[in-house]
Picture: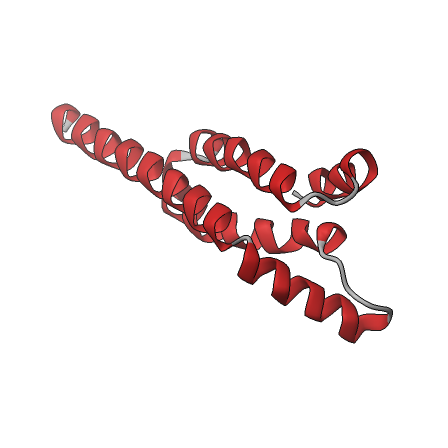
Length: 108
């Protein structure tokens, strides 16, 4: 997500909407690629990745305090993308987990 945030800043002038749209496929891929044993960690990792990737996109004043304020503002204004992506990852992870448990019960 950090690299996508940098790419967004470079190509689209740090557009929060573009960053949010790019976040959704990352959520889907994260939920689908994570190992079966770690499947419940995907909805936890996704919001952290969103915040880290928002650093280059967040517009703030000079210095660390300005960057922090830009990050907090970005998190507040882009909460819809954050919640939507986390929800998508959570639903996919739950479906994968249920299928994995059912498959294990049939075998054993």
